Image: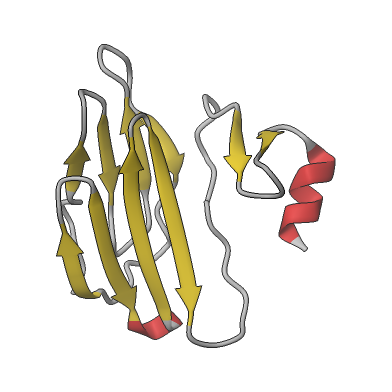
Length: 125
């Protein structure tokens, strides 16, 4: 089932938007402009088993054999993908020049600047 109007999740003021069918992720801090953290997939995906609460959403993408869990943790997203089969999957899809970097759950957490060519190459392979 495609979702044209993404579910809106908000906790403590900032607004967060996650679109289950396109995996687009947006964030709008209180009083600030909207920032796209991940651009949408080129084509909407089939979504099944969507469950949503005020700070958590989960769903499956049967065509990719993926389970997706998005949780809000104060002023951050926690996103988990679990695959039911081996294969390649690219996320996030970055197109917003205002994104300066990511904190990745590697080791004890690491900040990766968005323009760091060595890290981008490492993460793509």
